[in-house]
Image (tube, rainbow, N blue to C red):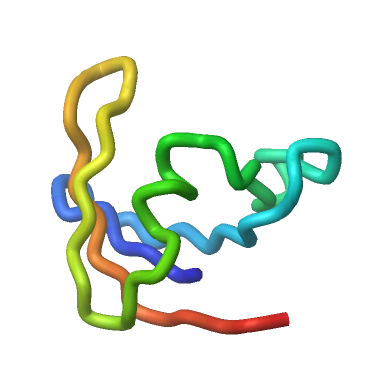
Length: 67
């Protein structure tokens, strides 16, 4: 999924994977992470809010791909 941080306008690309395959440096987040749980089942154009250690973060989903 491609996301835009609504506060900073920074783009991030994440692939949701199993816990064993997760590696944030390679853009792979665990299915059990708060961000992945917020993204599951969402479509392009949707905004999601995630509780991060520094507080709530909002992201707009700009692209969804299945691999």
